[in-house]
Length: 110
Image (cartoon, rainbow, N blue to C red; front, side, top):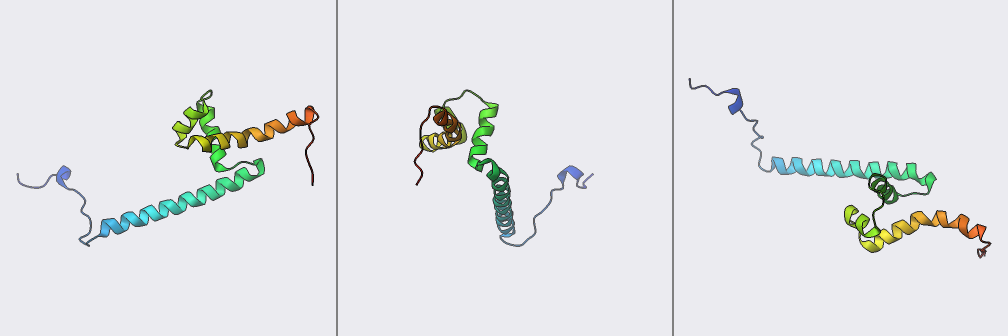
């Protein structure tokens, strides 16, 4: 029996040269646009909390893997170690303010 079986049938791309490349680029561009849109939405939602998406990413990772060193966090998140120090400092800064007020430290207002 010489007929083609259903398992032998494969979808064919159109016979237009470069079609898959053009389609692939369009998908990449759309995905990038979606990513930008979602980051903008996340930024707006975090703004009232004084956070940025990079802080959110760090906090999310810490929530799932608490107790890691900054070096381990920077490796897990693919961030440079100096950038990780700055992120952690950003998150610790609001926590330090009440301690300064309790000890009577004065801030300079000009």
